[in-house]
Length: 456
Image (cartoon, rainbow, N blue to C red; front, side, top):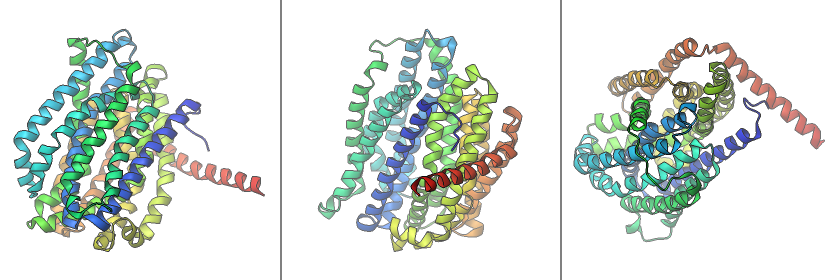
């Protein structure tokens, strides 16, 4: 099967990153299975889903502020002699953002809990302040490793972080019931990231500078680039989980609201199987695109985008159709009979999953060619559209299917607008993407045929 870059380094990097995503998916899915079958009620799963969504959103947004900017500057020849200042500026921004986040949790956790009609969130968010603090070294090492295009260490660090949490969830099958609480899950997350951060720091010593260098110009330029990516990450994450937030807010009965949040959380867990290749490709392709812009220009980026979107679409279609055709057995396996009302949610989500590669790769590609402002404006527009359409969807189509109709509407409109933007900036052609999709099936067929002949 043909790949958009044939160098073995990139193939190996993609394989390691995909393996990392698969391990996170495995830990997350099996852990969710244990929690839903043996530990938590629908309402408790809804509370945990809201907490996890908020915490992961904050980390995702911070990485948006830091990662793309640092990688872009590392591969910019104008800053080749100032890499120490670039890395120190990134660490400084990381620390300041974390302090602001801690202040927000300290002062606003009660307000946020009341807004989402989930009283437990206040204590959980305040407890998670230690978790957020430990994210500083972990995230810094991750960004530095990715900036140098080293993915193996990152894989091990994430394996430790998620693996330790997974072991705690498994242990809930054998410990007293009173110890199986959401609060103890947070304590397990804190311990897991502590161990993973220590490993990350030790494994990243060769890339870390021991003496801090402050360069005001570099800090300013990183913020100028990163502020748009920060906004984009915040907007995209909110509308990605608009069904969680708006459902918790819009449904009058708090208990009923958490039950519906648990349905959408379960669907998100299943959908993660489709996100694995998308995110793995994005992690590897972003530094590759940044490097390509400095050497080969937009023509190379155009090829990467068309080829990867076509290939990913070809891989996602059969998986999503399989899930669409047998949703009940999948839900029973993943979450149990209490989640069967979510069958139509899962089916509708899978029916339009073929649009996800195009939608996901747009942001990474636009950022990598140095147009974060454009990505920022596009994502702000879709955040507003997603929140409004989700709220109206609940009112017009009901509490169960309203949010998923809104998600499909936003996804479809987004792909149309993104296509015209990419056509003007990179000269992307839909025909080329469809051609690569079909050629992927042809390549798979020829590869399978060859393997069968070898066996015979």
